[in-house]
Image (cartoon, rainbow, N blue to C red):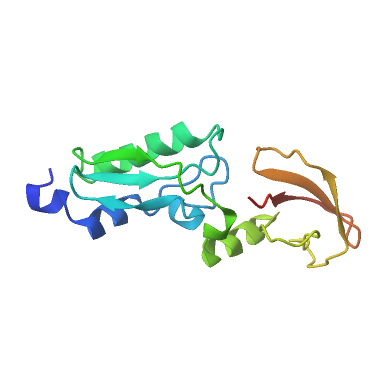
Length: 154
């Protein structure tokens, strides 16, 4: 059980939640996604931004963060959903981008073309704006002919 002194230890709180996985893309953590907006001491709360306001994974992510906080003894720390400023794919860490690519998902970038995560070719085309999750689109590589998903920029 955490003491009053450790409840306000921001580093310990952030460490307790750093490895909470994204439920839709399990190779990413909430830290990789850049959705943890910080900690406020009074009242103690972790600030979290959903990737977008309609993201179906938001409640699952908050539940997983709650479990991680409770497991670490931080039951008194609340979770605050922060909608402004809205999350952007620019907040995905470099490690997150590398993990997406290694997992076979093209990381977001402002270019009109995606780089194939299989062979690295830029000779690609969007097949469908809609992917397995709302944050991804279906693409195809014209070089290696492999389909892949691309994380949408927003």
